Length: 391
Ligand SMILES: Cc1cc2nc3c(=O)[nH]c(=O)nc-3n(C[C@H](O)[C@H](O)[C@H](O)COP(=O)(O)O)c2cc1C
Image (tube, rainbow, N blue to C red; front, side):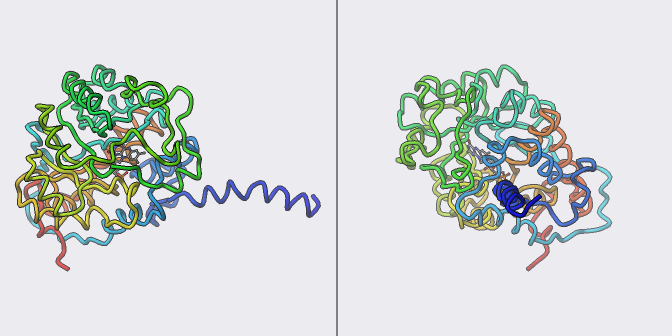
């Protein structure tokens, strides 16, 4: 091969190599062999998903806002927290069960709302619902699901919550809430951290769009232009989110439904206090998986001040960067009642469909039970601040 030819073929490879190396990879340093060995932790699922998903799906799922500082910080902060174990407690029986919004759950892990799941699996949210049912985990269905909420409800006995993005057309939003209630969803989870969409460079660089056959199935009543619209079409004006949402909107939503209303996307303790005053049933401390406002704190570092503001009045959940059973113990030690996972179950979905999801949850549960045993906290109420090493 002559030199110009070598240079030419190198030039052809460079963009692909750059794209690969630019993918965030949150695997810990002990993951040698994970590429080919059994899938033993959630990072193994991430590795395999990176090879199995389409580039478009991978860019969409991995993406964080801006420089992805918050995305990384969600993980780093979990890693920095040390646990404080107790020994000789007697841990032959581990009880991870809890009660949440009037329902008994076997363990404190839920599937967070994630949009456009047909990008990851041909059956999209139906397949996720199957995985959730098999694992007996509540699944929070996104407004931007690619299967209609009624179809998902019919396909699964899994406990379903519905995540609401408020549309500027109030009549449409009221209808959507009503549909949710009619279809048997148990909790209405209103995402409040997205009056506008976060600016995600990775997603924009990839030219993110909804491919043929994939659309926002819950928005059919608004016409196909809306079900297919790209995130930054029309110069970034994302007209299917209502930028005017405020506390009056929350009062209005509460008046539209009998379901418990939970606010997702609280970081500021002052907002947590207001949430209690506005009578919501619970809140989820979330930074949208680092996808909305870059450089906000990790959720786990925001949690203590939120807990102080809430003063035990309502349950507080947390998501963002939960990848290990020890992360769950840390979140519960700071006062969270339960956690949600986002990307990890999408990796499971992409790698093995509903069984992949079931397996991801099985791994997390096994790690949680192991961590509880070794911390000397055999039931969830036993996990307290004293389970954390004092700093
Ligand atoms: C691909 C993807 C799509 C998401 N779509 C939504 C959504 O439609 N509604 C919403 O409230 N949050 C959405 N989120 C945020 C998740 O609900 C959750 O807050 C976040 O993924 C948790 O962080 P983790 O991915 O590190 O577990 C999405 C997250 C991802 C990764």
